[in-house]
Image 1: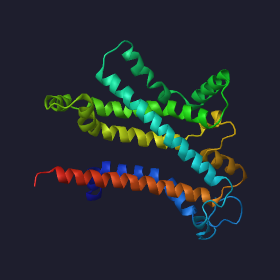
Image 2 (image 1 turned 120 degrees about the vertical axis):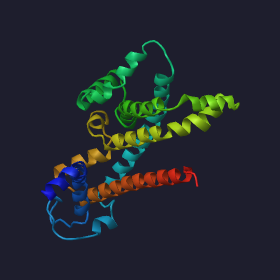
Image 3 (image 1 turned 180 degrees about the vertical axis):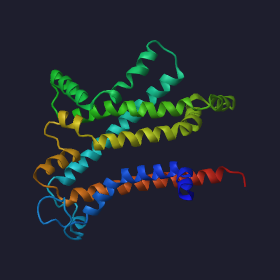
Length: 268
């Protein structure tokens, strides 16, 4: 009975830990198999421990080239979607204009629409415009579907902001630009950062929309898909593990900075 009571008391924590383990398990498998030395072309069965793939992560032709291209597209798409999404979010929250309600509803369409439908629609648009499929069509497509996620993240942050802080800045003779840079932007920064990180992850990871609109351009997800037809080099696991480690370090760094700011803000 004491065990059942303990489980009942900690049910939420246990469910959370099990869910976290379920989510992290694929990453652990990828990490473990990045140290594998498979005998054949497919890295699906453990053979023996090896650091060869870590010593030469670019040992597979075009792997690092596709990775570099994905990082470039993700960086530019994040910048474009973050700037446009932040402006749209402020406009939707702070101003009243015609069709505001309709725009609010339309913002969610790219998130609700199946990716294959959006990909086919974009391909049709580009072909009708006579655009050559490649880097720029992929970048435009990525900015378009990342935009909704940035707007949603920034909009939630802007709606929770206290307008009296900006009014206080204006009462202290701060100009519109100075008030925005010194007061509004720092308060909205967490929402903007969250939207930017989400946009980067979505852009870097996208396959369906990219596959429709890339032409002969090969991004990292497309390289992984193509490699899976012929074999799965260990270097793919190495790149995946490195990206996961960078993401975890960024999250931990953000938590550390936030905790330090919280401590410094507390009265001594």
